[in-house]
Length: 434
Image 1 (cartoon, rainbow, N blue to C red):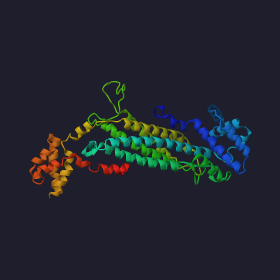
Image 2: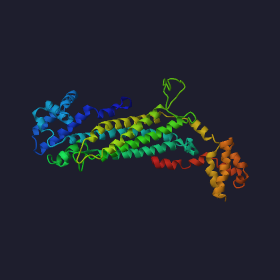
Image 3: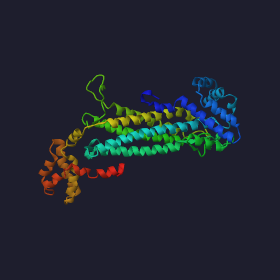
Image 4: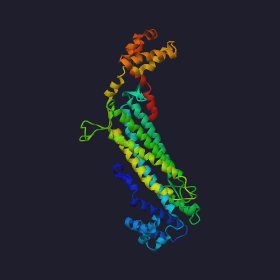
């Protein structure tokens, strides 16, 4: 975790203090149910909560014990016994370390997802606001980076909204899939612990029961979770790159907010660089990088091994912390984005109406000209604009083969910008609702 790219709320989920508190809650809830089933004394379960509940666990002491035991869960249980006293012998009855570790990871990932959803909602709200603001702001659409036909800046943002709305749905599904509890004992057979304990702990921790755990929760769940985060990161990068392209000097249709006192370059005082969206591109690469090791974790040996453990100690915190930061950074970029409609119109007019070429092509075919000849006639005049800077409409009017089929006044009608936006409302209704 890099503090530069982290928000305190998400970091707290992965702190040692939070982890040990979740460990305690799992163990204490399990002991409660064991007491109800008559396996351990009810007074012991009560004492565990009374002494361990308000306790502040000494992380240095746990680390000291682990240096000797070489086992983190045993180190915690030993420290808990120092706090609780003799009744601590009833903790962890019939359980194995993975019951605690896997269930804790599920809790942490579920809580992390809740924060990711907050960031996603902020981003969606920002995109919607700016999309509505620029619903009919004309700009040129580009394919292959080359002028194509007109769109509106609002439509660009509507596309982003629809994409992140899908991301939100995937994130909800990922949360549902990852939030499972396993308290099944060694190799997952419940030989030494009743399945009712698992059901109770799951209920108390806000989780579902894992149908079959082989001492560990199957890692296909985790693979899908981190793959979902990777897809969301790619969507973040897509919008970030769009903004970066629009900020290029030669385009300059939109720009990241440049605050008073901000500096763009240590050498060139004139620079206004898209540093936030460039940063988002880099962060997206990191989140995607965590998906592959999560997929490699799926294939564990037999009922379990711990080859996944070291991986998840990295990717659990890093992927969620990084994506959380990225969502809020992108939301802020969109909220403060500087948009330049005049420059959009200037770029739109740069090729003197070439963006109407398809409309002229279609009109020629409807006037009886073959598609091949229609394409040749339109392209012939379009190339004069590209190569000579000629006005496209004037060239068409002066082309006898074109003007003999389409009168000048009809050609002029085909250069109406509003023609391209007649279905903007329909698209917006599809994305945002009527």
